[in-house]
Amino acid sequence: MGKYRADLPQLKPGLFVSDGGMETTFIFHEGVDLPEFASFVLLDSEEGRARLRAYYERYLAIARRHGRGIILDGATWRANADWGAKLGYDVAALRRINALSIELIEGLRAEWETPDAPIVIGGAIGPRGDGYVAGRMSAGEAEAYHAPQIETFAQTAADMVGAYTLTYVEEAVGIARAARAANMPCAISFTVETDGRLVSGPTLGDAIETVDRETDAAPAYYMVNCAHPAHFEQALAADEPWMRRLAGVKANASMKSHAELDQSTTLDSGDPDDLGRRCKSLRAAHPSLRILGGCCGTDERHVAAICEACA
Image (tube, rainbow, N blue to C red; front, side):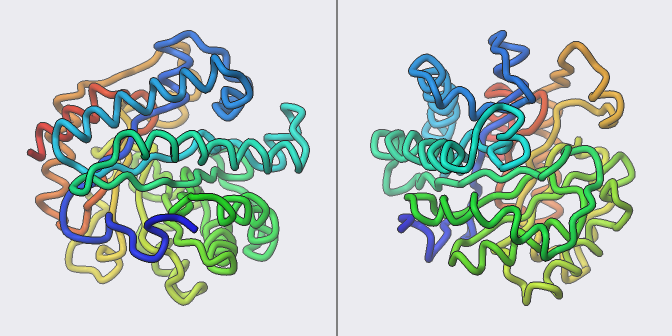
């Protein structure tokens, strides 16, 4: 049973932080080969686990310095059946790797947590397909597909599951239903394009309202990730009820579109201080935003800048 599973502290007043772009950090800053953009392969070696611990500790140090709680997600964004099969991981191997991801963070929590700065452990879930392309599953298919990973997390110390870079409503609905069946709180995080809409077409508000309607509001909260604030700040309408369900942002450092980023051979790290100021403005305009962190192209510099701007 997760320590905070029945009472997520990030839903209370105050600012929580999360990490930055794990995969882009390892590939572009540390020169690590991540086949299929899958960081979970690092869990299968002592060297890889040491890299992950060092990565997490950089963010834990920032959170401690600023007196903030933090959400740490496992390195399991790609650890589902289709991506696992491409890398030679069968059902049993994926179950082992998903559980190991939580065990690693659990050890860090024992070392770093303080009463005033809780550490929430998240089981990270990614889309069945690509994070920049709309998928094709029905809600029922998505529920069945993602259930094994969620059920594995439910048997660990994970406090919740976080589903990131989702591009269409049906997959979000399926994940939310699977999490509810496993008695796991879940956060649903959508990727949006430069116009603030999901790649599949709906507005962010329409997507949140549809998932809530189809699941009896099963998700604990919603987030936006893998987009620069300039791409979605105009899509946030503070006077609409769905905004109260949007609790966080994990922003890209770059203002480039997903199509541009997909074809780029270099990392656009943007301006950490500018990102910090933009996140501060977002939070000032939308008090429901209690979780701030980074996505592609961000690292500890960006999260530190966010903390400093929001001090």
